[in-house]
Length: 215
Image (cartoon, rainbow, N blue to C red; front, side, top):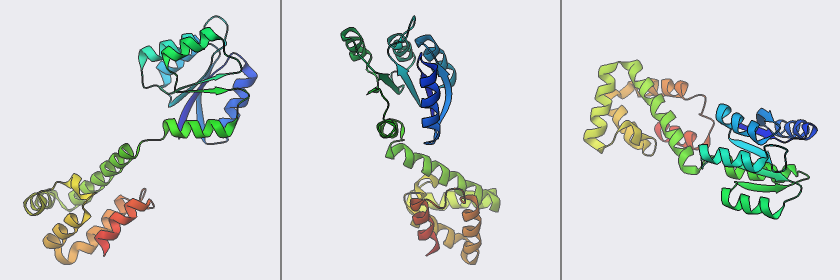
């Protein structure tokens, strides 16, 4: 779930905006009322996105964005505003907010923008799945014993010049290796692997991976 911080000097706006986000599966982990709050909350909570009003007394949104940018150029900061002065616009041009959304808030625009900015890239998502699959494979093989695990690793290297990490993209390597080593016990290993991957086995690319092993 995406984690958000909302900063606006209008407490009613903060409350209503929080309710809107939470009803759309965005977790509001912190709220503040000036740019100094924004700085503190970002440093403490490391949210996925900060919604930051520009026009606030004492410490405004420009102050908050500047301090957040000093901590991270990659921070996702969405500026919300109902009016923009020329000086504010010039300052924002230098600080490069992730997006600027005009008030009154359009929740559909907010959700589209958040999903575009906070959704993991395809590459990072694939890397994450590969890591999970590799860990499940390792756990399954270690359940057979350290010697059996070492045999699988050795045969993958010998026959396919591959590691366990490569099996996510090349499940046929794993299938042949396990069948060569374990013969009739191969089916039991697949049952164990399915159990170790049950939390992600409903995802299509994981289903495709397991289907190669089962057919």
